[in-house]
Image (cartoon, rainbow, N blue to C red; front, side):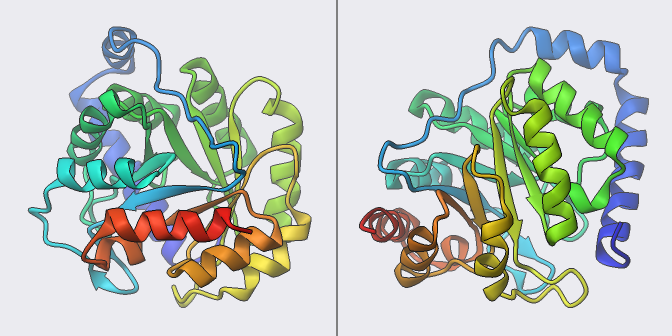
Length: 273
């Protein structure tokens, strides 16, 4: 595990997990999940370039992006009609102003539009995958740097059991080697995405060149996702031309005045390559 920020986030996640288990046993949570029906599926465009649009009220690096009373249904509706393949919803409360209720509201609004929500958080236990599914998510983020292999396997096993897609997040070549092993182990049985986060974990600053430097190392059997550092049509065009099939975009969409139009423009640029 990287020191500093990730350790802080993992410890906070463990504390929230303990409190959640105190309120609701895993057996009871599984009963609630069983009543939810199948997870919404991730469907990618035949053009070969898609965007996961992000709902993120605060960034540890940039501060507040939107007010805490943001109209979540309107925002995710704009994302869906702008062409998003999925909507990532931050549920981490201490540094991102997120909560599970945001995911539930977003997933409910997205359901009739056929766009899945993804729980983005610092997940450490399968219980939290089940929480995401109970809130309506069709997918989850798994941060490889943060977890021991047995915990990663437990998270992936639970997501596979629930029919959810997983975005595997890597930061360097060592993470990517593990990603290859996971794709080999799970890729035939579930939907996996291979992501590179180009945000430096020590400074929390974006280092865009890492997207291109690390791309050749990524597995090609699953869609490759550029995370962070994509803010303009020119950025989208560059990463699509390099070979990324997807981008996860948050800050630019949250700050922009017309997220539907911005998202449509980013998609058009990426698909024009």
